[in-house]
Length: 66
Image (cartoon, rainbow, N blue to C red; front, side, top):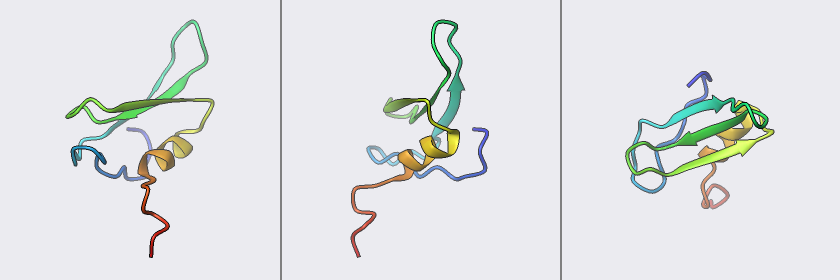
């Protein structure tokens, strides 16, 4: 992971070893890939910054609940 922003644990299995990296295929624009190698949940985000991708990973359904 290249960012200093901490990634939250996996929302599915609780795994803490979340990976974040940029994929640069030759046939399309680069994209960010973030996921959990423990349970295999990954998402790929094109045309976003690394910070936007991490913010999306860290968002949870109950974030607005008080």
